[in-house]
Image (cartoon, rainbow, N blue to C red):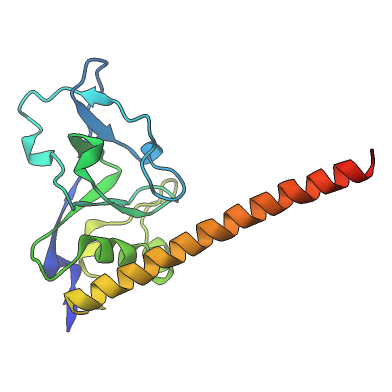
Length: 185
């Protein structure tokens, strides 16, 4: 069944807040994510929860879509990193029903074709931005929850395979360098 993202999720912008050294809430910014879209390990609370950010606190399974700049990506928020809010560089995508696995939707939004389409339609000349309506209007075939789970299993296996290839390549370089160094001694 074809669905638009607006039918399965609510989208709101992250917030712009001033940071404080004695904060108790993590303020997630694009710089907090590495190339593989994992959070960096040095996340520190940097904003105060004075009760005015409760509507912006992230919930387990919320998706953060980096909509500003040239590096667009989507990640699933995990509560284990701590109480957090997203900066205004992100859209927070909150899934409305149990028919959608947040990891599947994140995988879909990170797919090459979707990111390419969004980037091609981004607005702004100096800092390209993807608009909320562009994301809301993405239409796609929503597979069953079981198929979503299987897709995620295959995707995770592919990531593990890529990590193994990188590790093998790195070890091969070290070994080759060692052999060549020993041959000139």
